[in-house]
Amino acid sequence: MTETRVRHICSLSGGKDSTALAIMMRDKVQDMEYVFSDTDKELPETYTYLEKLEAYLGKEIVRLHSERTFDHWLEIYGGYLPSSQMRWCTKMLKIRPFEEYIGDDEVHMYIGIRADEDRAGYRPSKTNIHPVYPFIDEGMTLDDIHRVLDESGIGFPDYYSWRSRSGCYFCFYQQKREWLGLLKNHPELFKLAKKYEEDSRRKAGEGRHTWNDGECLEDLEDPDRQADIWARYLQRVESLKKANSTNNSKKLLHILGQDEDEDEDMLPCSFCHI
Ligand code: SF4
Image (cartoon, rainbow, N blue to C red; front, side, top):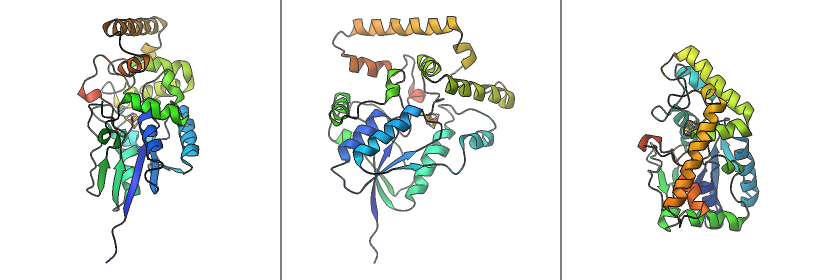
């Protein structure tokens, strides 16, 4: 009788938590496979960060790609941009390539959800994938993640200076101030995101043609609107500081990574944003 092959896979998003997990597991699970589902629409900082991690791990991070491009799937979905309610992008460009890569092997999939987070993990559609949550098992919180990243010398991805989450440059989970960060740091990518909206408006009509709910990028880049977004953001920073003077800057950064009005649907998925 042939023995069932059991694989250990750490799925990376290009974010701080999955990176800290990979660092932590490097010496614990020798035959760990590190994979990254690449949409080909990621931020340049993400690719640089993965290369840095790869050097630290001394092992290849396998880049998984969908057989078809984002633009192909956009066409199939009638030109409707993905959204938190219709997240076909994660399914087609991240989860499906991952599940194909695994095939029918028994897999322990390591996921970097922390003990201080309140979000559901990845729910595999295949019974041969068994999620493992080392941070939760070991009670590790945000402070521990900072420590792991600092001690390894890997640190945070560079996009953290203007954006709180990993993912595609046009990800609809971005806050408005993060869109402005994209405009400032990668104007060419902002322009491409804007073009997607324009094309979608032409094709899908008014139904779903903005990345942001109800506000197109053209409106967002208006100087008055930009000033308004920044003013509100700074106001929020100030009130958070006052409300909890015990918050250190790391915790504050964490809190500011979420919109005030973020509801259950807007919580980012564990596949793209860990
Ligand atoms: S990062 Fe955002 S846009 Fe990209 S696949 Fe994930 S949910 Fe979709």
